[in-house]
Image 1 (cartoon, one colour):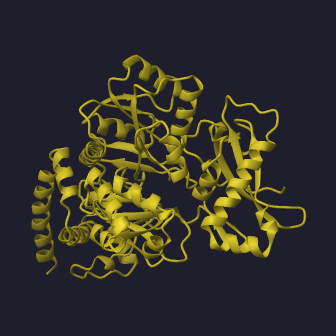
Image 2: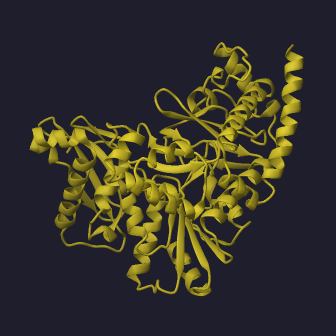
Length: 511
């Protein structure tokens, strides 16, 4: 019976592989699928995820052992019968070889990526030539859909080190654009823009904070934005609407992608529809209640994703599980829990909710016409452990970013921030927001900037957090959210020089 089951699975896999080979031939095929996605494809994607798990159970030594240790028993077409994997329970428990197909690393053409270490420890991830080719085609397909142009010039400002995003973005973009891999070097980017001039449709790929640094630098040198058309594709961390509003004072379009070194850089991407929806959720309480629930004050990132490539589920605790739907992945990722919190919604279910309000429905229709993607949506809140609890309320980095940038006339002076929860002499804990000035900014007094930032933070937290607002009403001292302004590279930022990603939670200290 086991032999028959394996034979059926392998024959089915050959058919799926052939079908996917056609689908991945050209970015235009990816665009066609994204614009014509239908509910039956979700059932097909789930079946494929189940088959991927079962193949891993048969052919991946580590996964077979993992299942045996968890008391797994085979059940036809039951994806949930496979226990979730994670870094601690699976990746750290087995070697790279054990986690590969047949326990062998494919040497020629494979590339080793490294996670940034933002979770505490860097990890190495081996990717095969076939896997990388698939990733590059998917990212190229998304790019041609969201940034239509015949004269794309991508300036890749991600780090060019061992991290997955930088080199893979450059290779993927070269399929559909002219590319210069500058890395996060402001002067090189400025020189490139000046040398090639305004005759191209530029796309800057970078982490969100770096894009702000670039804008501020260009403004400070009097760069003539008018003849240029600059857009941006950011990733690696969340981006608030306050920061997007700030960036789109200069950039034509700023969109964010969702990925992870553990999985793939192209799990999802923003579209005109998702950006419209996120902005609408800031003010439309009825829609917010319907989509997020009446007790949710956070504003998630919203992406559209392709279940045929990355099949997503959520646990009872709203953590995201991902299965990469291809056997081309050298280290199969099956029902992998990356630790991100979110929820899923189909395009049809979203539109059914939106259509109950005629005005919102008209806006959604106009937004949809931009990219016309019918893919399902991922509402992403980020890592569940990236918070500070204060007065019964959770303070998230995205809340702080909104408070710092929204309506702040001094936003151009800010390089970045991090949070601590510090115990005062009277044994009370207070959140402290450490603000780092840009390298070129020197202030004789930081009190004015700190005061503007503090008032913006308290105002924003009171607007979005019911718990924080109630704490203010009951105890006005809850407004004692402290802001400390530091020169560039000083204080808690002294150890972060040279890091490519921001660290938002710093080690606490006594005040």
